[in-house]
Length: 439
Image (tube, rainbow, N blue to C red; front, top):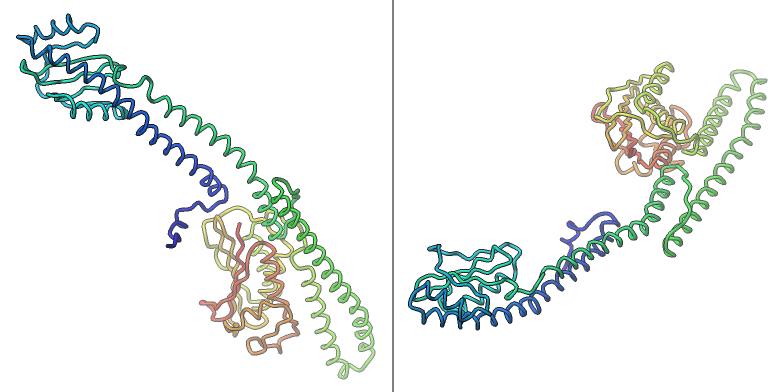
């Protein structure tokens, strides 16, 4: 037997599930205690007291049957059975009905017992919690018999239920406060991990139980190792790229002394190498350049498109989609580089590029579309890897490339907690690149 259907009704958050684990046993235990008390104790006591009153009512009905009239019966009961404190008089109603308050559990037991054991029983009125009114048929007609409710029901029977509910709620509140304090370190760890995944570093000190401290220390160590790895990679590639600039400069100076016709092809090769080194430097910077800050994404994309248009590129900014407003926390320099790389790729392999922005309350999407040959679906995953060149999909005769343009955009999108998605442009027929970031 599987319980997969229960997953649809379970709380999603850890606090909700922990509260369910805490509350479910307490509530079930209280219900079991109340049911057992009602059936084994409260109901039993009520039956015993009812049987005692029934024996007294048998004496009352014997006196009533021996009296000549209803009025004489009432007087005889008052005179002969005065210690019983039971009042008898002719009933003023013709069709009595059982009545009680909704929470009077003992009243249900009382009515059922009277109906089973009392001859001539018609109905019982238990609306008055201090008095019991019974309507009984006799040879003198319908009689009303009244006596004190305390003789047939335990005093304050609801106290156990009130105490159980009150202390159950009180202890649940105390346990919830303690549970919230225990879960707070998990939320802090989740926020620190989420921020680190988006390229932000927020202070985090492990706290809480031993297991939570162990998880927090493991996260801190992991974060330090990743930061050291990124720093070492950046220093390595930056150092190599800077060191290669010196011989390239010497080559450029040497070629400048040669004949122009002979030096032209070599100067083109040097320019390609210089462009490759610039891509290496951009890749080493990745998403670590600049600090996160609130920025208007629409204005930022508009400025990037304007710069591309001033450079002679056929780039168009489409309208803004979505109903979201306000700013988004981004590393401006890194995000500008990612968008510029996508625009440069579109212009390199196509003739026209269109850029659009979709901003909602939860998501920011920046879309770059071109009319180039695009990338086949089977090769899109490879295209996002560093140093990958898809000769069958892109024209490599339009400039040197080491396959880092899309890899840089992917790195920057992931550092912002987002993703870069590739597809087919429905408008232009070429490549569609979407940078999607959660706000």
